[in-house]
Image 1 (cartoon, rainbow, N blue to C red):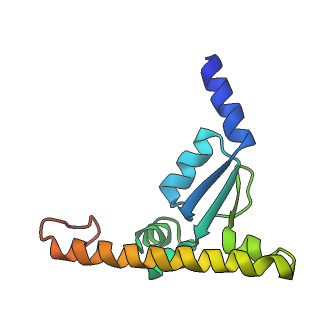
Image 2: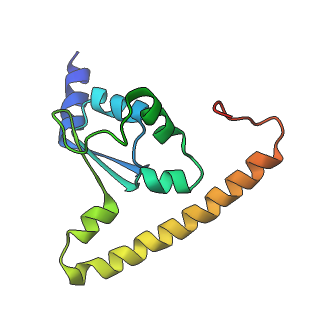
Length: 128
């Protein structure tokens, strides 16, 4: 039991960092694990534009919502681009450049994934 308490304390004092805004399933697991702060690079809109629309479709169909509330009694979440915009202007440029580099690289990897996925006739998505 002491290990569980230590993990919960660590999670409450830590932030959860992810590439994409957590989906409805993931954000629930993150909250249940005890994390109070969630930071992500790509918001849902980017995820949709990257060809992964399922998270948004599930939330629309199940709960008729665009997304979970960014600040609620369980956690607070924020996108890195929004956090950068909140910084003083002179601090933004190098961070925006880094985000642009990461985004470009991710786009390359995403394109490769989608090409290989469509070329594999055995690979099907649960929603198609």
